[in-house]
Image 1 (spheres, rainbow, N blue to C red):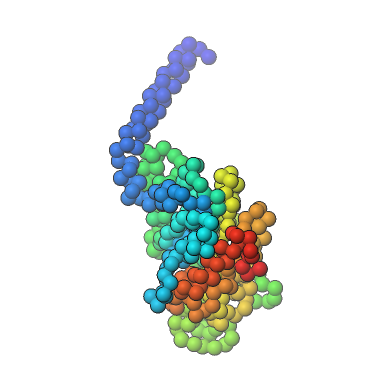
Image 2 (tube, rainbow, N blue to C red):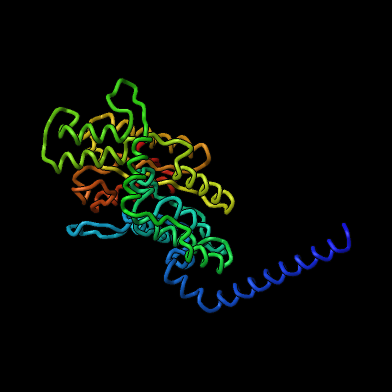
Length: 349
């Protein structure tokens, strides 16, 4: 290398060092000035990770199923509060927020302080969160913004990601097209001949004929509900599903932090699903639940299978599939989780 080349390289390195020093200085300035305000406006979950884990040894990660109740309920406790009451020797912290899923739970868990007393992590496994309508939901951009702010990265870099919208920002039309394409990719196999190959074809078959699996032609509302169930659950889980990858990351993190993971498979309205869509859709749902059980119990996870634990009469919402339960349903789920943690039993096995 000639002296001229060495001199040029040295000048470039000095300029690069100056740029890095300026960026570092700007990051420090931003961190102590505008960052707290941006964090408060764009990320409620980071503070929740820190505040809700103080003095607790169990944390409950969930979505709206945790705190949604019926106006007729005499017991309006959250599921996590019921678990807390059933395990008097423990303290359960609430890390639940509407529309959250395993990808968000992972980031919440990463932000739990290392000096916390947490020993057990209860992760809500919502079966609908594995399918296209949830993955590409209109609620996802707001959650992705929170995930950006929870990253282990320089504060100025995170602000730049927000400024350049480095998160999903789809239009309604784009969302519809993405979901439709994914319904066509949501292939499945059944143990016997079946007229449909994917969720799209099955949805079109039922919705287009206005006929249920048993030949009945009920009201349009009933047909719409059947189609909702088909679009939510007519698929087969595998290693490529983003939620499976999220759960894998959670297991690895729990192993690293010394936490016992507990996966709480939420109850679905299997009674209504069976009556509207027949046993084939229920078979697919049960097989996906078993896939989760087999995959994670072998890795030391306590899996509580609440899939069929709540009856139709204990579901609050009647016009769309949800995991919103009346008090009897919430109590059943809480009891099974508490018993699994205390070593008494596993629900649905």
